[in-house]
Structure formats: structure tokens, C-alpha cells
Image (cartoon, rainbow, N blue to C red):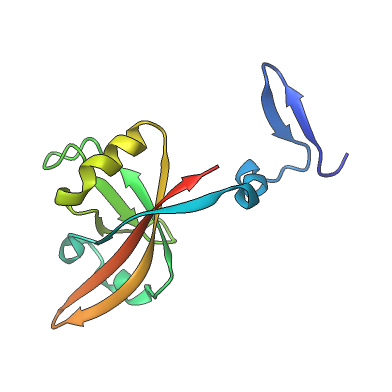
Amino acid sequence: MDNELTISGKNMITLATGTDLSTLLRPLSREIPLFDSYVAGTGYINDPSILDALKLGDTLTLRREPENRFDENAILVLDGKEQKIGYIPERDNTVFARLMDAGKFLTARIVRLEEKGSFRQINISIFLVDF
């Protein structure tokens, strides 16, 4: 049957149409604003030209990087193509790392882009995605 959710195995939900389950849940989710910050470390990325494609309103992916040797609470900031653009600043990341380690899904959105000489400041808002 088209567009049918079925229970299979031990309460595992599968979608008969093959559509990703996150697509189904998206209308049921909401973003809860948590904090405004910026993207740190943009000067250290391998290909700085990826910053040229960023624009206001872009949604960014946040991913934990617990094996980071400089910061045990490191959180990567990735663009829409999953390319690294930097990190959540160390001074801001402890609570967010704990939330992510507890299974919470966080995301960010670009709220301001500013050129400062050869440096580009990327200001972001961080959200908890609640289902």
C-alpha cells in the first residue's frame, strides 16, 4: 500500500513507500532557539572557498567530534554539503556537547555574515530540534 506505516519486528517502524522517516517526522518537529554564537576556526579549514557559498539563513549541521585532541567537547559545524566550515567556540560548547551526547539533535542557522579584512565572521543561532 502507498504511504503506509507498518510495524515490523520488535516495534520497528518501516515506511512502505521507501521515503525517509525523517521526511515524515519533519512536520512534527520544531526548533527551539538556544543560543547565538559564531563559527570558530574558519581560518583553518582546508578549502576556504567553501565559505563563499554560504548565505544568510543557511541551515548548518552540528556534529560531535569527541576524539578532538584539543577539546573533548568539540562540535563541528558543517555546511549543507557536509563540508567542515569550523567549530562551535570552546567557550560555548560544553552544554551543547552534553545535549548531543544525550541524543539530542542540534542544528544552526546563519544569521549574519561579515567581512573583516581577510577574515569572515559567521554568526549563527543554535537550535534544539524537538520531535
